[in-house]
Image 1 (tube, rainbow, N blue to C red):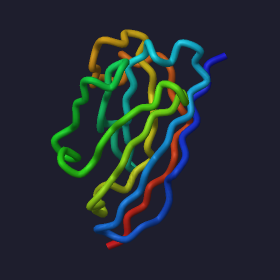
Image 2 (tube, rainbow, N blue to C red):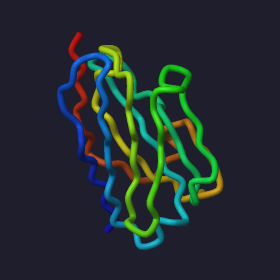
Image 3 (tube, rainbow, N blue to C red):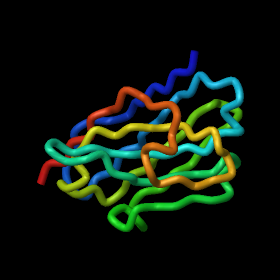
Image 4 (cartoon, rainbow, N blue to C red):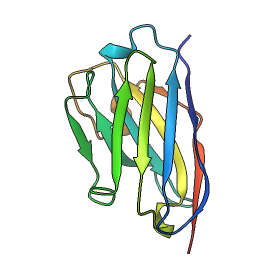
Length: 125
Protein backbone atom coordinates (compact mmCIF):
# COMPACT_ATOMS: atom_id res chain seq x y z
CA UNK A 1 0.00 0.00 0.00
CA UNK A 2 1.45 3.32 -1.07
CA UNK A 3 1.39 6.18 1.38
CA UNK A 4 2.66 9.72 1.10
CA UNK A 5 2.85 11.67 4.36
CA UNK A 6 3.60 15.38 4.35
CA UNK A 7 5.00 17.29 7.31
CA UNK A 8 6.61 20.62 8.09
CA UNK A 9 3.70 22.97 7.56
CA UNK A 10 2.84 25.70 10.00
CA UNK A 11 2.29 29.40 10.61
CA UNK A 12 5.07 31.83 9.73
CA UNK A 13 5.34 35.54 9.05
CA UNK A 14 5.78 36.92 5.57
CA UNK A 15 9.41 36.75 4.52
CA UNK A 16 10.02 33.62 6.53
CA UNK A 17 10.89 30.10 5.48
CA UNK A 18 9.52 26.60 5.85
CA UNK A 19 10.73 23.20 4.73
CA UNK A 20 8.13 20.63 3.82
CA UNK A 21 8.89 16.92 3.76
CA UNK A 22 7.02 14.05 2.16
CA UNK A 23 7.80 10.54 3.36
CA UNK A 24 6.90 7.94 0.75
CA UNK A 25 6.20 4.29 1.42
CA UNK A 26 6.92 3.36 -2.20
CA UNK A 27 9.39 0.52 -2.61
CA UNK A 28 10.41 1.85 -6.02
CA UNK A 29 10.41 5.51 -4.96
CA UNK A 30 13.54 6.24 -6.98
CA UNK A 31 11.68 5.43 -10.21
CA UNK A 32 8.89 7.95 -9.59
CA UNK A 33 8.78 11.59 -10.57
CA UNK A 34 7.39 13.69 -7.73
CA UNK A 35 5.55 16.94 -7.40
CA UNK A 36 4.20 19.50 -4.97
CA UNK A 37 0.78 21.07 -5.45
CA UNK A 38 -1.15 23.51 -3.32
CA UNK A 39 -4.75 24.50 -2.81
CA UNK A 40 -5.90 27.73 -1.24
CA UNK A 41 -9.43 28.13 0.18
CA UNK A 42 -11.96 28.53 -2.60
CA UNK A 43 -9.41 27.87 -5.32
CA UNK A 44 -8.46 24.92 -7.47
CA UNK A 45 -5.43 22.81 -6.74
CA UNK A 46 -2.42 24.29 -8.53
CA UNK A 47 1.00 23.04 -9.48
CA UNK A 48 3.97 24.36 -7.51
CA UNK A 49 7.06 22.26 -8.31
CA UNK A 50 8.14 18.93 -9.77
CA UNK A 51 11.25 16.80 -9.90
CA UNK A 52 12.22 13.81 -11.99
CA UNK A 53 13.31 10.41 -10.70
CA UNK A 54 16.91 11.24 -9.87
CA UNK A 55 16.59 14.94 -9.10
CA UNK A 56 18.41 15.93 -12.23
CA UNK A 57 15.51 17.91 -13.58
CA UNK A 58 13.16 20.28 -11.79
CA UNK A 59 10.38 22.64 -12.81
CA UNK A 60 8.55 25.41 -10.99
CA UNK A 61 5.41 27.43 -11.35
CA UNK A 62 6.19 31.07 -12.10
CA UNK A 63 4.59 32.06 -8.81
CA UNK A 64 7.24 30.21 -6.77
CA UNK A 65 10.27 30.30 -9.07
CA UNK A 66 13.33 31.68 -7.33
CA UNK A 67 11.78 31.25 -3.86
CA UNK A 68 11.02 27.53 -3.63
CA UNK A 69 13.37 24.58 -4.17
CA UNK A 70 12.27 20.99 -4.66
CA UNK A 71 14.64 18.15 -3.87
CA UNK A 72 14.61 14.46 -3.03
CA UNK A 73 16.62 11.89 -1.14
CA UNK A 74 16.02 8.53 -2.76
CA UNK A 75 17.95 6.72 -0.03
CA UNK A 76 15.41 8.03 2.49
CA UNK A 77 12.33 7.82 0.22
CA UNK A 78 11.69 11.48 0.98
CA UNK A 79 10.72 14.53 -1.05
CA UNK A 80 11.36 18.08 0.14
CA UNK A 81 10.17 21.58 -0.62
CA UNK A 82 12.26 24.43 0.75
CA UNK A 83 10.15 27.58 0.76
CA UNK A 84 11.82 30.95 1.27
CA UNK A 85 10.62 34.56 1.12
CA UNK A 86 7.12 33.37 1.86
CA UNK A 87 4.17 35.61 1.02
CA UNK A 88 0.60 35.65 2.33
CA UNK A 89 -0.54 34.37 -1.08
CA UNK A 90 1.47 31.19 -0.47
CA UNK A 91 -1.09 30.25 2.18
CA UNK A 92 -2.59 26.90 1.17
CA UNK A 93 -2.70 23.21 1.89
CA UNK A 94 0.37 21.67 0.27
CA UNK A 95 0.23 18.19 -1.21
CA UNK A 96 2.95 15.91 -2.46
CA UNK A 97 2.19 13.56 -5.33
CA UNK A 98 3.90 10.65 -7.07
CA UNK A 99 4.00 10.08 -10.83
CA UNK A 100 5.06 6.60 -12.01
CA UNK A 101 6.53 8.08 -15.20
CA UNK A 102 9.79 8.94 -13.51
CA UNK A 103 11.48 10.54 -16.46
CA UNK A 104 8.69 13.01 -16.99
CA UNK A 105 8.17 16.36 -15.30
CA UNK A 106 4.41 16.64 -14.98
CA UNK A 107 2.41 19.72 -14.07
CA UNK A 108 -1.15 18.41 -14.36
CA UNK A 109 -2.69 16.76 -11.28
CA UNK A 110 -4.20 13.96 -13.37
CA UNK A 111 -0.71 12.73 -14.26
CA UNK A 112 -0.02 11.84 -10.65
CA UNK A 113 -1.13 8.51 -9.29
CA UNK A 114 -0.63 8.87 -5.54
CA UNK A 115 -1.32 11.81 -3.23
CA UNK A 116 -0.61 12.70 0.36
CA UNK A 117 -3.18 14.09 2.78
CA UNK A 118 -1.71 17.58 2.73
CA UNK A 119 -0.10 19.93 5.23
CA UNK A 120 -1.34 23.43 6.02
CA UNK A 121 0.93 26.39 5.38
CA UNK A 122 -0.25 29.77 6.65
CA UNK A 123 1.67 32.98 6.04
CA UNK A 124 0.73 36.02 8.09
CA UNK A 125 1.28 39.54 6.79
